Image (cartoon, one colour):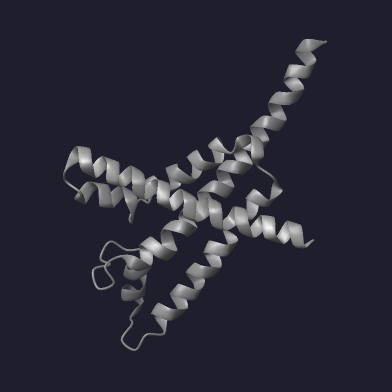
Length: 153
């Protein structure tokens, strides 16, 4: 039981934060070639979170031969950390609903320099994307194996 919990924790943290690092590396590469970072910020963070979703999917595809049922729950640890960050921001003395939203998900995260999005929201998005993509990869592997066996007979 302890081994399963440790494996779930390692896969959850590894996939979420590893995918976030991959998303930042992709964004940095785009910034070097493109120069202008405003549109790169829009695909890295809110409103689209495109690069973190793509990085989570790419991470799941890269680990396709090593995925387990634990990968379905890779979003739980980053989700718990995101909820903790949400409660921290919401309980701040001058927080309004729009400020809380902008700090974690919005496009106007200037007061916190978008660190909340970088440290809490992006890993959650990456972990969720990883979980969904790993479920799709595992389902496609299950569906493709019987088709190969039937053609061999």
